Image 1 (cartoon, rainbow, N blue to C red):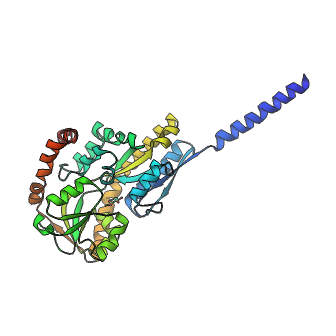
Image 2: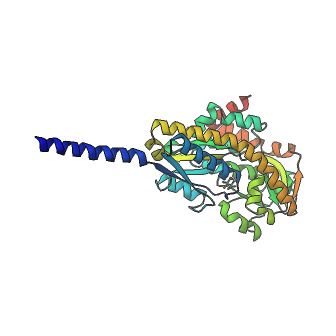
Image 3: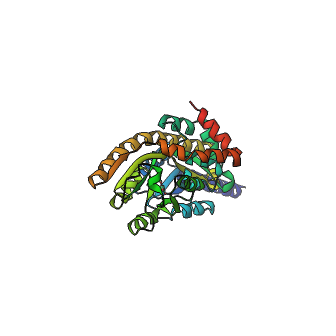
Length: 327
Ligand code: GCU
């Protein structure tokens, strides 16, 4: 009897020790991949998020960030996330269009009236529904990050759509981006971001379009000397997590992740504004000319895209109409 009791105590003791040490040391590390450099505002915002998550979960959830497309370009990391080799990816609405069509709404030119309208849409149920819409593709969106407005850059000023005639313009793999460049008279050429510097340098493409920080930090400012501020789209960056990794988190940890992400999204608004002026000044020092553009002709040239959507894509049209109504 005594022996049995001792044995039982020993077994329970061991179980307790294991149990305790297990909960004290159990932590989940989520691997996050993205294709921007460390000095990009979005990397800094996500770094803040990783610290917040760790704090909010007492170190039980950690996020390890792999920048600079170390783990593959945007498309490759999306696929790695779908296969379970990566937990999280920072992508953007253009790349996401082929995984979840609702993201197209962010890629339609001249839909947002201004930055405030853009933020309000992201933070409304429309924005939340779009983040949730990719569940069937094996991941969901956690938050948006401001990525400014995108404009054309090449080796001459683009003042009107006429100036894009016959020009090869690199676009992201997004049907809307392709449609937009076609409507403006250019020749859209989809290409991975990492290949763009060489493509511009060697004349594989003549022009590209992006926001000012990405233009400068990816050193495209060395090879394209005119940045025309036509500001055709506001395409947000989007932080994603695989449904497998998300569903494996406790409810409490899921909440902590969302809170940390919201806090980093707010921080990003400030980081973005700072980064835009800093990177513009850097590019100007390299001899880049920033051209102010009268947008009227650009806005008119893309109107057929709206009529097309109305006729052929009623679901997207509903989202667009809802976005227009956001005040
Ligand atoms: C933005 C975004 C990148 C993306 C790039 C592109 O700069 O931050 O992640 O790859 O656009 O045009 O491909």
